[in-house]
Image (cartoon, rainbow, N blue to C red; front, side, top):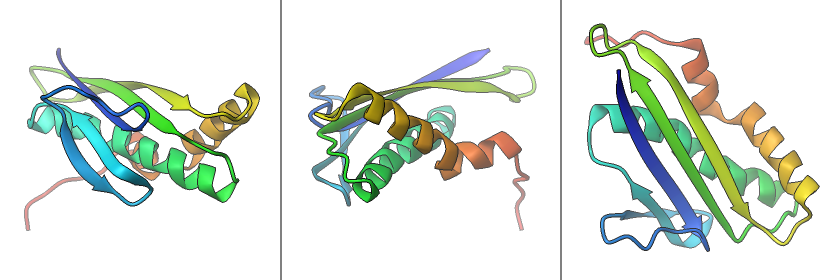
Length: 129
């Protein structure tokens, strides 16, 4: 199995690593940092990680929950023989003055609405036209 690890972060939890790449972000002034090599496997894991980070900000905003920073670490594997996915695992860290239960409720909501993780759970076809 080949394992691919990525970290996306924003706000007070942004990466300070010289190797992190910065991207503009609609909900944070300083943008989002991404720590990941540019390979297909890393991009595959980056998609749900980025979606989860975005959705923390989106859903927090809609519920008046202040979020100062978000960090999502994700890792996923691919079988070296078939390149079939072996799954993606992630953790989400939120820096917020809100009560712990409020943040936990926000994360439960995010996990239920995040589009990319939902789509990946259902699978898809990929083909050239």
